[in-house]
Image (cartoon, rainbow, N blue to C red; front, side, top):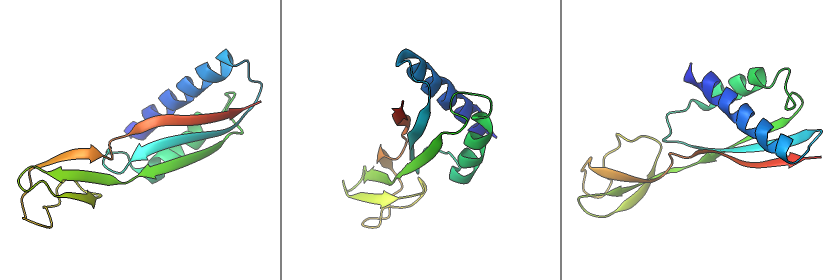
Length: 113
């Protein structure tokens, strides 16, 4: 489950920022995850709960924001939303696409005290 290693990295990053801000408590963390990133959302949620234990983020509310997938068809230049990189272009049926958004995986914000 690579979501556990992702969650542990997120906790490390958030912990570093909280330490730099001299935070005693981290109330909330927002994470942006693209639908085309290859991350299983439910597995990441579960992994985050386990990775938080015994850290400054133990009681932190985690919010995972889904970023929809959007691709550009290289054949006809049509842009469309998708949650699967193997979806043919709805306009021309071609599979050659460039991902415009949906690969994101980042800590968006921390709410600290």
